[in-house]
Image (tube, rainbow over all chains, first blue to last red):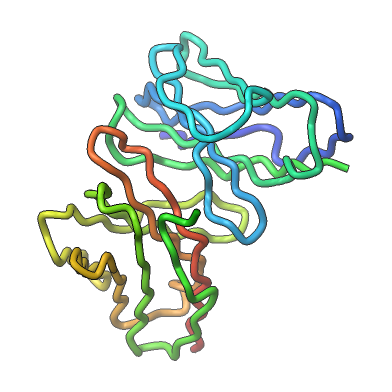
Length: 112
Length: 112
């Protein structure tokens, strides 16, 4: 039973560029959430996708956008990258809009 | 504004002894509390939770205590084992949201 998978593992981008991160949920899960974990901080909620729609959103600017596909996988897009966007980006999945979240290993994004 | 606070960045304990990790919260609307454990290069994994209608929940070596009047919860690990060495995140959510707000984490080191 595959858990949550994320790609790529690491990524280096230049300020002002755009980036796309990918997530496949745990088998049987239909809801995907994205979190940003800066160094020395806990994960901060970006948004959640359910039934291919953004259902909840945290306090992140519109530069952060996402998408969920019919197979429940998801993408996180960040435009106009800033140095402060450097962080570990975590994807979590669960069944329905509640329930225990299972996290992937994350994508480490470095913006130079 | 940190709604969930873990004021101890690190904790060092001898194998076999008790580990006590503390967490405070400020938002009185939180009614569900969770602890996650995170190893390097892995995503957080759910450890134990407690609803606000309870003051204690136990699962094997792990016990979570909730003091609603003090807005404080703690995780007890007895006996501590070297494999427990990880970063522990306290998180809280409010009814209907299911999106946890995380603290900054406490790094637990259990010495053999």
